[in-house]
Image (cartoon, rainbow, N blue to C red; front, top):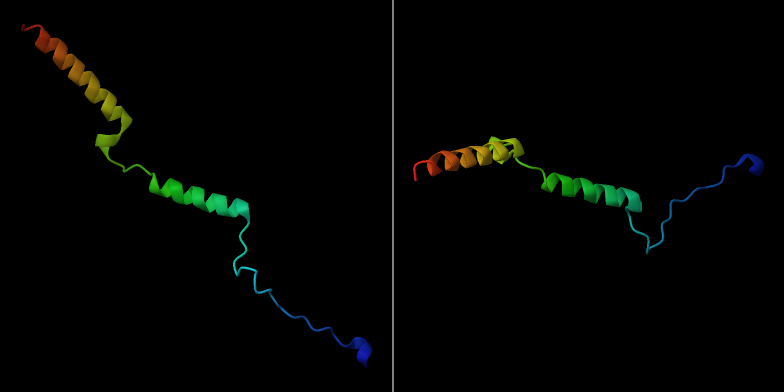
Length: 70
């Protein structure tokens, strides 16, 4: 009954083919995610932009007040 015999399937990979075939889009996306993780700001109140602006305004007000004593 060779008619019903199932063909054999082999998982043969060429020697020049890499084990992990990564699509270029996935590779770019993983690099972007890694870059985002390294560039994350620390959650500190001293480095927040709002605090920096308030600190600059306070310095300017202090200079304005101290310039009146000249």
